Image (cartoon, rainbow, N blue to C red; front, top):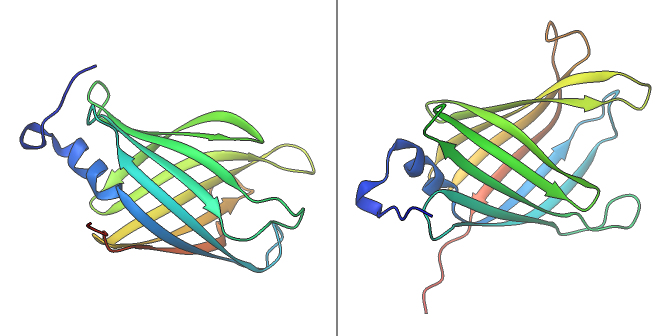
Length: 167
């Protein structure tokens, strides 16, 4: 394991540091062909691991889903110096792990993936995050059933970083 000091962090590690902290996330799901309107609140805690290479996040829903279950999953976000990309690996009790690549353009991070449809086949999906400031990000999930010609906004989210508690 390679130790990375704060002064020697590259651009990739600097972006990872921006993810760290305690986040309150509110997701507003729209009424669409993909699901019903609802509001969900999540608590996310993200920490830079000691090597300085990975950010680990745990996400916990603050209310049960329609089946009475609380969502609790984890993710690792890391920067690959080899291919100059950010990678995202998610593990959830329902199945996993699942790895995707983030494409970063300024403060906007986009993660493209496929969703298996109940009716069969797959739909293209993308999550787009905009880190508007060090303590706030906005995001949206979009789905396309026509290979990206048209996108439907399925949900929109706002994440707000909680102030650090020292003591």
